[in-house]
Length: 373
Image 1 (spheres, rainbow, N blue to C red):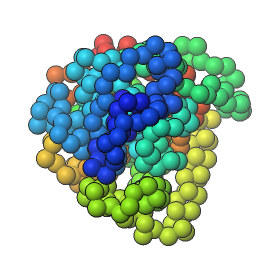
Image 2 (cartoon, one colour):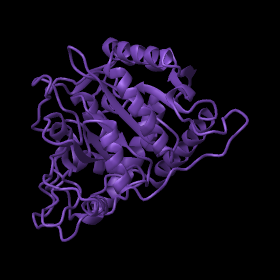
Image 3 (cartoon, helix red, strand yellow):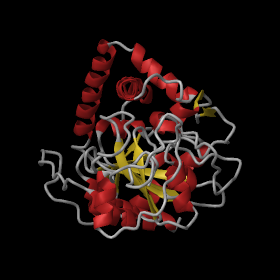
């Protein structure tokens, strides 16, 4: 369990000196569900302070010790990548399950918003937070997700362009791949891995279609505004001052405290527009296929990332470049590793909110296909 999730008898530190050292009295809802299903909860994993960043403090990548594990669920990714654990539970507010999973070569799944309860989890942003899973394979994650979930699949109504049947195998799926401009931010190794995956899926009978996704910077503006405002609300009410918070966490909270209500409301309205655009897109396709991150794992010492366009961006911006959208949408998304001679590349699939089962079924088949690449 990531150490922002309550486990009875253990303190919940969230990677911070600001949290109490007293043990939690109760299990988080997800932990209680897993125990009822027979799971052995045997370890807590470290994280970036309060899950605010993707640095993976004090940890190194299992493929290259000069590289980061990513975050904020970096400890969870390492627990799985080590081979000692087959499943770890994390949280994902902008990509915090999928990013370290991609960097460390494991599977990472963020369910639909609300599919797994966040009761007993220290919040970062209550309208963006998801409990998610990192694991050694899609089918194992699906089993654990099924033990934790509180919602069942939402079968969206048919439209004139959306087929009326639930796809039963991969050949019935229409998968959208973003256009070249959207993908130009991916570095050559990542773009090459995505191209190979799309070609293999096409050969397996999948209909691959070009598709539109909203401009990343537009997504990040609303995402950061919502996250900062909601984080500030929680932390200013929960803690007396920020003197024991680290610098990065404190900076996010202070940004949120300075934000006016108008900015927050505007960001929420923009998120609703994004949801409408994505819903229209999914009248034409069943799933979206894109990179999980625009680069492979950065160096531990890097504070910035160079995108495929040659542009340099802050490491947090670059890490969540292709993941934050699906937190804003509340849509399920999963990363499946493509491993080779170098660093692993995460291949991301996303579906409509509530279509977690469709996504997991397709991802299990995609996992089989790309393992042969």
